[in-house]
Image (cartoon, rainbow, N blue to C red; front, side, top):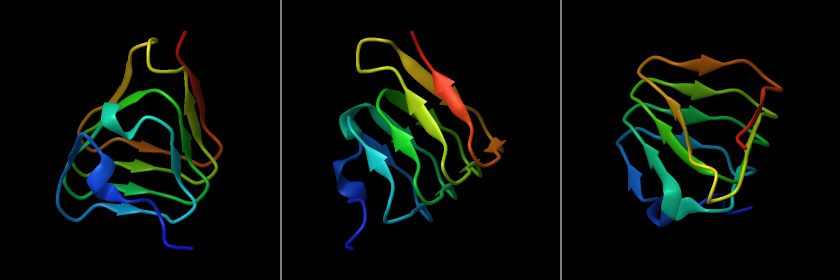
Length: 88
């Protein structure tokens, strides 16, 4: 598995780790700050803005589609595993 291609993202900081199993359906709506980790089996189907030094735990999903807005996680944000966020 080659993993997710970070160059597809709208913005991507330095020292960003995205696990190979991550699915981001609208990478053009995703901005990621420096020193961010997105763990295995995360699914994102909406706009996403992640601040510096943040982490999204494994098996999490952030869903909503491109027209529902953007989920924002600010500086030093961390989510545990199996988190579900639904934008509507």
